[in-house]
Image (cartoon, rainbow, N blue to C red; front, side, top):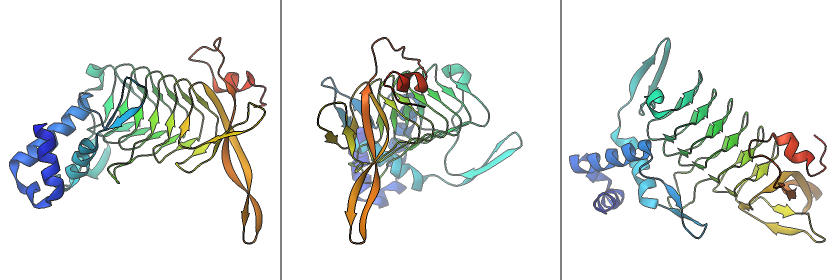
Amino acid sequence: MELRTLIERAWENRELLKEKEIQIAIKTIIADLDLGQLRVAEPKADGTWQVNDWVKKAVILYFPIQKMETIEVGPFEFHDKMALKSNYAKQGVRVVPHAVARYGAFLASGVVMMPSYVNIGAYVDSGTMVDTWATVGSCAQIGKDVHLSGGVGIGGVLEPVQAAPVIIEDGAFIGSRAIIVEGVRIGKQAVIGAGVTLTASSKIIDVTGSTPVEMKGYVPERSVVIPGSIPKQFPSGTYQVPCALIIGQRKASTDLKTSLNDALRDNSVAV
C-alpha cells in the first residue's frame, strides 16, 4: 500500500519524480514485475481478471526517470532507456538468438523464446512457447502452456491506465500471424486460427448453433476460431469486413500440445 500511495502521488504530480523516495518506489515495482512477484493484471477466483492500474502507472513513470545508454551484447549494440533481461539459465528459460526480453518482463521457468520479443510489464507463464518473430506487448498476460506461433502479434497497453491488457489464458494455441490487441481475452485452451485479427471491436461470431451468437473482446474456453467476413453497409455500397468465427470446440481427446492443423481438422475445416 505504501508503494501504491507513492506511485499515485507521483502520477498526479510529475515533479515528484525528482525525489529519491519516488524513484526507489518505481524501481522496486519494476524489479518485482521482473521477478513475477507483482503483475499488471491477475486472475481472480471467479474467473475474471483484476487490472492493477497503479502498477501500470509505475511502468509508465519508469521511462522518464531512466537515462538513455548504450547496451553492448557481443557484436550487437542497442541504445535505449531499458536494460535487457538477464540470468536466463538461473530462471530456467531457453532463449534462442536473437530473442530479446526487456527488464521488467517476467518469464517463468520452462518458457522458450525463439527469435522473438517480450516487452516490459508482460507476464509469460511456465511451459509457454514464444515462437519465431512473435511479439508480446507491454503488460500482456500469457498463461501456462500457451503456444504463440510464428509472427503472432500480442498487443501491448500502457495508456489509458484503466484499460485491460491482452490476456491469453492457459493452454491456448495462437496460430501463425494472428493479431490480438486492445485488451482481448482468449479463454483457456482456445485455438485461434492462422491470420485471425481480434480487436476490442471485432465481432466474434459463434456459428456452431442454429442461430449465430455474437460477442466482442472475449473468446470462450476451448473455442476453435478462424477468420471470417460479414457484409457491412457503407455510403458507397455493401462490403465485406473481417470478423472471427467460432466453428467448434476443442475436443477432450485433443492433447494440449496438439498442432493447430489437427485442432482445425477436428472441426472439418480444410487447412
